[in-house]
Length: 260
Image 1 (cartoon, helix red, strand yellow):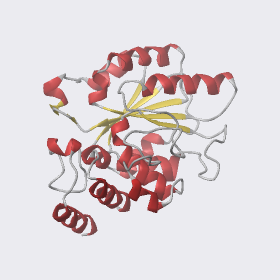
Image 2 (cartoon, rainbow, N blue to C red):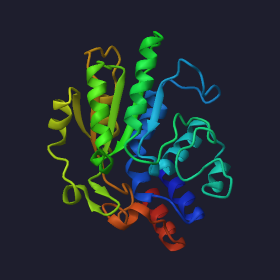
Image 3 (cartoon, one colour):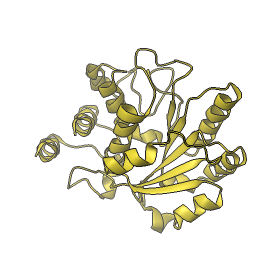
Image 4 (tube, one colour):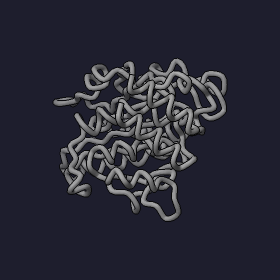
């Protein structure tokens, strides 16, 4: 819950952010950074580290708060989010923030870059794994499916795609704007092993991410069915909160709810 509280405080302080997206991904990021990824905040560029790319770059607020909790950033730095020349801009920038693997924000690029990382690891006989988190609205980008074909073609079983399937995007419901279902069948048709989970259930997330000894010759996708704005009742499944931040009174109410 601390990361969710940090997100709300940070977004309130900045007066900007993508609160709903930050909160829906928090459990996934927590599982990755505290249980799954082989990484070291003291050596963020270790060539043998696991790679994580946040393809849904607008959810960077959740990632910054996770990186701070994991020791890549000082918590005081969260107060500089979106300030002029801050190390914490509105989308991930590798050149500014320790622990960021790739600059994202223009949707649809993260999977393609992750494939490059996975291929490079194979060519160099490295054992690192590559994880990429996409938004579900992002899957409306054709470049995602071009990349998916390549991942299957090269049998990248060191690659795991996680879809933050909260069913909402900036302008409304994904199934109204550009339907994605049957989403699992689409990924299977592109040659992926598919796992479907409750993306806000830590036990299910960790079970899906445990790929020790995994070598099926296929890339994997985890369709994580989440709640946008998870953890705060008046934010959950509320479309305007895609790009809305809490007022002072809303912040007090949200923190009380999370603490309760």
